[in-house]
Length: 152
Ligand SMILES: Nc1ncnc2c1ncn2[C@@H]1O[C@H](COP(=O)(O)OP(=O)(O)O)[C@@H](O)[C@H]1O
Ligand SMILES: [Mg+2]
Image (cartoon, rainbow, N blue to C red; front, side, top):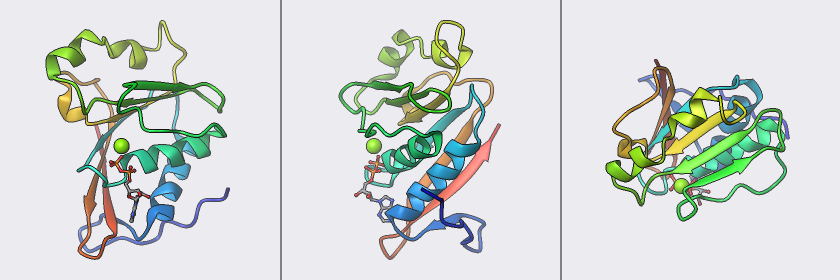
């Protein structure tokens, strides 16, 4: 699927996502362009569109398998696309439990094939990779969402 043009910014420079398709399209663009080893930290309230964005990333990578929320499985791995997608949801964990997962294995890419690591609820992490992309999703007044992307 071709991504729609992402042309809509609000006065603060946030990307306006008018509907779920816009969130998907942003994800598709990311999935088509990101390089192996990229960690994306997805922040935002329940229902703000984090999983939807990852579904778009999967489409952009060429994954046809359906991407479902890893709220209960913690980690879902998809190896069918251009590069692997590792999708994590830490919502149900305590920071101490997150440490025990040794998530750095995913972004070091030594024991696993380097891919995109998309993490929902990164607030649960007491340590972060040296560099990452952060996407903050917030609710607009009218049921839309906004995305703010920063990286370090
Ligand atoms: N930009 C948007 N505008 C309106 N609804 C959206 C938007 N993006 C996603 N949604 C919808 O919001 C709901 C929750 O999305 P989801 O991705 O599961 O959120 P999260 O993973 O952050 O809890 C879904 O029904 C999804 O289709
Ligand atoms: Mg989710």
